[in-house]
Length: 48
Image (cartoon, rainbow, N blue to C red):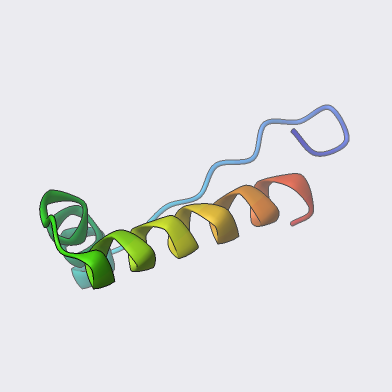
């Protein structure tokens, strides 16, 4: 929440498809990318 308001992050088009594909994969590089993306999402939610 930012200033008492809910913040939502949306992926559009190919970004959404690719992110979902990365989450399905089990290799080390994919897991690292997913973890980094999710960390950035949390940062954006805290301070857009």
